[in-house]
Length: 125
Image 1 (tube, helix red, strand yellow):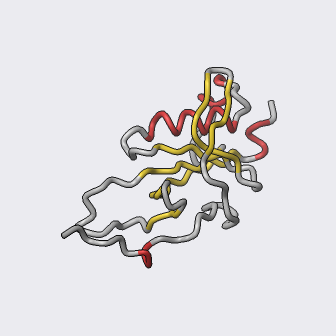
Image 2 (tube, helix red, strand yellow):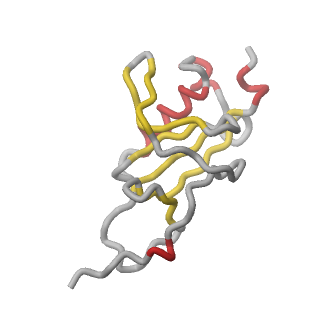
């Protein structure tokens, strides 16, 4: 028998920087196409990796979009100095953030959301 999902481990979708609710990821159009993500009212950009196995692409999407698609600026930024990042486990179907530590018997990989918040001074040229 399949174990039922424990709803008590699901949490509200809140930004890790400002703790406000964030919208469900949606198509964000860019010069090169689109990615699934959004922008928090605090200015943090987030990108969704629904499989949890391609976080690098989600990171690049979020960072370059946060830099207004200026690739040179994005690759010149220093982590933890010019921007902060935070990765959340995410249940896309339920639009819920999961705890960092999953259940031991959780065989289904969760999706991931990566949040990037560029410090204001880093965007000034």
